[in-house]
Image 1 (cartoon, rainbow, N blue to C red):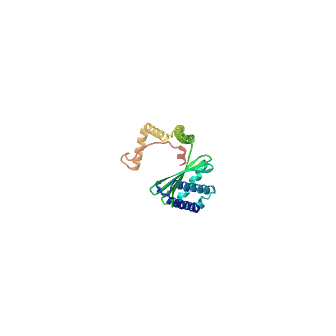
Image 2 (image 1 turned 90 degrees about the vertical axis):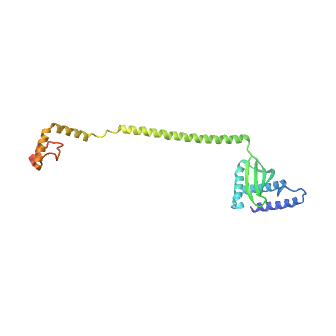
Image 3 (image 1 turned 30 degrees about the horizontal axis):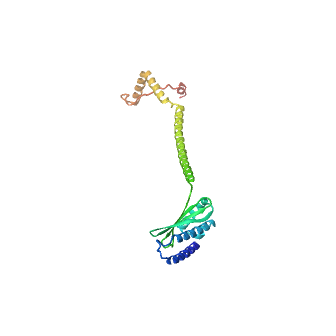
Length: 240
């Protein structure tokens, strides 16, 4: 980073002194020729630092420079070998100097946009844009489309499989319910048998009820109800 600042400051001072001797006034702080020299120097230094894998040691924690250098590092995969600069242009905005440098590469050319403040004292941004052919752009767009559509179809297939699993689970539950035995009806059968037994022995029930009422000293049999009569084993009475 110190090397970049030193070279940039030296070139800036040299061209500023040269520009002072010219009769025509410049439209900004630097001329197009000077902007090309500054841009070329910055790109050369940036490429050297990236190739040497010395980004952290050179730029430190400066977020603008780190992002700019990482962008150049990523772009080199498509640019190939850096073969220098072919042209450069400069534009001036309020408080900014924008230098666009055309870079030559073994595989693709690129444009590096360097944004400095109007005093050329600090970086505002560095962006690298690789120039792709129309065929390459269409191929990438088609690949992105295929990946997007493929992802959508995979998700739809998964959703349909999940829904079909729900239907299968419902069918299994229905079969399981059909296979389960019906609950025993023994209590109901016993009640019916008791009623039938009582209906057949109405007179016996009346006699037993009257005997119980007499034993209890009750005037009537309203205080209790005989629900069933069971025959006991005679042997138990004999043992008693």
